Image (cartoon, rainbow, N blue to C red; front, side):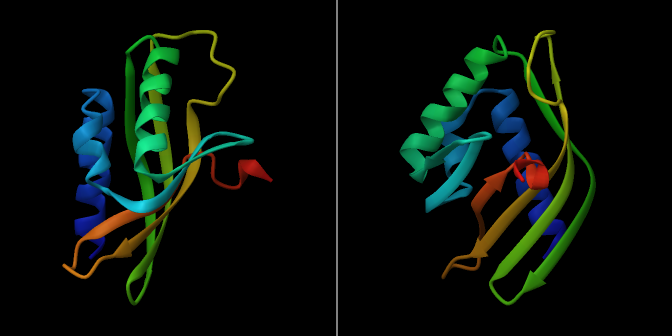
Length: 127
Protein backbone atom coordinates (compact mmCIF):
# COMPACT_ATOMS: atom_id res chain seq x y z
CA UNK A 1 0.00 0.00 0.00
CA UNK A 2 2.72 2.49 0.93
CA UNK A 3 4.56 2.08 -2.37
CA UNK A 4 1.28 2.32 -4.30
CA UNK A 5 0.37 5.64 -2.66
CA UNK A 6 3.89 7.01 -3.21
CA UNK A 7 3.59 6.12 -6.91
CA UNK A 8 0.20 7.86 -7.12
CA UNK A 9 1.61 11.01 -5.52
CA UNK A 10 4.56 10.93 -7.93
CA UNK A 11 2.12 10.59 -10.85
CA UNK A 12 0.14 13.57 -9.51
CA UNK A 13 3.33 15.63 -9.22
CA UNK A 14 4.18 14.75 -12.86
CA UNK A 15 0.67 15.70 -14.01
CA UNK A 16 0.94 19.06 -12.22
CA UNK A 17 4.38 19.67 -13.70
CA UNK A 18 3.05 18.82 -17.21
CA UNK A 19 -0.22 20.72 -16.65
CA UNK A 20 -2.11 17.52 -17.51
CA UNK A 21 -5.04 18.33 -15.28
CA UNK A 22 -7.43 15.81 -16.89
CA UNK A 23 -5.09 12.99 -15.87
CA UNK A 24 -4.60 14.59 -12.46
CA UNK A 25 -8.35 14.45 -11.79
CA UNK A 26 -8.24 10.63 -12.16
CA UNK A 27 -6.48 10.52 -8.79
CA UNK A 28 -9.17 12.41 -6.83
CA UNK A 29 -12.46 11.26 -5.34
CA UNK A 30 -15.59 12.93 -6.74
CA UNK A 31 -16.09 14.86 -3.49
CA UNK A 32 -12.43 15.66 -2.84
CA UNK A 33 -11.24 18.96 -1.43
CA UNK A 34 -8.09 20.91 -2.23
CA UNK A 35 -6.70 23.61 0.02
CA UNK A 36 -5.80 26.14 -2.67
CA UNK A 37 -4.37 28.56 -0.13
CA UNK A 38 -5.18 29.36 3.48
CA UNK A 39 -8.84 30.36 3.59
CA UNK A 40 -9.65 29.02 0.10
CA UNK A 41 -10.87 25.47 -0.57
CA UNK A 42 -11.86 23.92 -3.90
CA UNK A 43 -14.55 21.22 -3.63
CA UNK A 44 -15.09 18.49 -6.21
CA UNK A 45 -13.13 17.66 -9.33
CA UNK A 46 -14.42 20.57 -11.41
CA UNK A 47 -13.37 23.21 -8.86
CA UNK A 48 -10.08 21.41 -8.17
CA UNK A 49 -9.20 21.36 -11.87
CA UNK A 50 -9.98 25.10 -12.16
CA UNK A 51 -7.85 25.73 -9.07
CA UNK A 52 -4.87 23.87 -10.55
CA UNK A 53 -5.18 25.91 -13.76
CA UNK A 54 -5.15 29.11 -11.66
CA UNK A 55 -2.16 27.81 -9.65
CA UNK A 56 -0.28 27.09 -12.90
CA UNK A 57 -0.99 30.65 -14.03
CA UNK A 58 0.13 32.06 -10.67
CA UNK A 59 3.46 30.22 -10.95
CA UNK A 60 3.95 31.33 -14.59
CA UNK A 61 3.46 27.76 -15.84
CA UNK A 62 6.61 26.59 -14.12
CA UNK A 63 5.75 24.62 -11.00
CA UNK A 64 7.71 21.50 -10.13
CA UNK A 65 6.36 19.71 -7.05
CA UNK A 66 8.33 16.88 -5.44
CA UNK A 67 8.03 14.98 -2.20
CA UNK A 68 10.74 14.56 0.37
CA UNK A 69 10.36 12.48 3.50
CA UNK A 70 6.95 10.83 3.75
CA UNK A 71 5.03 8.96 6.47
CA UNK A 72 1.91 6.98 5.56
CA UNK A 73 -0.56 5.77 8.19
CA UNK A 74 -3.21 3.30 7.00
CA UNK A 75 -6.45 2.25 8.70
CA UNK A 76 -8.62 0.02 6.52
CA UNK A 77 -9.68 1.96 3.43
CA UNK A 78 -8.19 5.28 4.62
CA UNK A 79 -4.59 6.50 4.56
CA UNK A 80 -3.13 9.66 6.04
CA UNK A 81 -0.02 10.91 4.28
CA UNK A 82 2.34 13.34 6.00
CA UNK A 83 4.83 14.61 3.47
CA UNK A 84 7.61 17.09 3.06
CA UNK A 85 6.41 18.78 -0.14
CA UNK A 86 8.89 20.86 -2.10
CA UNK A 87 7.82 23.30 -4.81
CA UNK A 88 10.24 24.69 -7.36
CA UNK A 89 9.23 27.68 -9.45
CA UNK A 90 10.67 30.56 -11.44
CA UNK A 91 8.31 32.87 -9.55
CA UNK A 92 10.50 34.76 -7.08
CA UNK A 93 7.84 36.85 -5.36
CA UNK A 94 5.43 34.16 -4.13
CA UNK A 95 3.84 34.89 -0.77
CA UNK A 96 3.50 31.14 -0.14
CA UNK A 97 6.17 28.83 1.26
CA UNK A 98 7.81 26.56 -1.29
CA UNK A 99 8.72 23.96 1.34
CA UNK A 100 5.72 22.56 3.18
CA UNK A 101 4.64 19.83 5.58
CA UNK A 102 1.66 18.56 3.63
CA UNK A 103 -1.19 16.34 4.78
CA UNK A 104 -3.15 14.21 2.32
CA UNK A 105 -5.99 11.79 2.96
CA UNK A 106 -6.51 8.89 0.56
CA UNK A 107 -9.52 6.59 0.37
CA UNK A 108 -9.61 3.17 -1.29
CA UNK A 109 -12.53 2.85 -3.72
CA UNK A 110 -14.58 -0.27 -4.53
CA UNK A 111 -12.05 -1.22 -7.25
CA UNK A 112 -9.22 -1.14 -4.72
CA UNK A 113 -7.69 2.07 -6.08
CA UNK A 114 -6.36 4.74 -3.74
CA UNK A 115 -7.79 8.20 -4.50
CA UNK A 116 -7.05 11.53 -2.83
CA UNK A 117 -9.98 12.85 -0.78
CA UNK A 118 -8.18 15.73 0.98
CA UNK A 119 -5.22 17.54 -0.58
CA UNK A 120 -3.70 20.00 1.90
CA UNK A 121 -0.18 20.99 0.91
CA UNK A 122 -0.15 23.54 3.77
CA UNK A 123 -0.58 20.87 6.47
CA UNK A 124 -0.88 22.24 9.97
CA UNK A 125 0.29 25.71 8.86
CA UNK A 126 -3.45 26.35 8.41
CA UNK A 127 -3.77 26.58 12.20
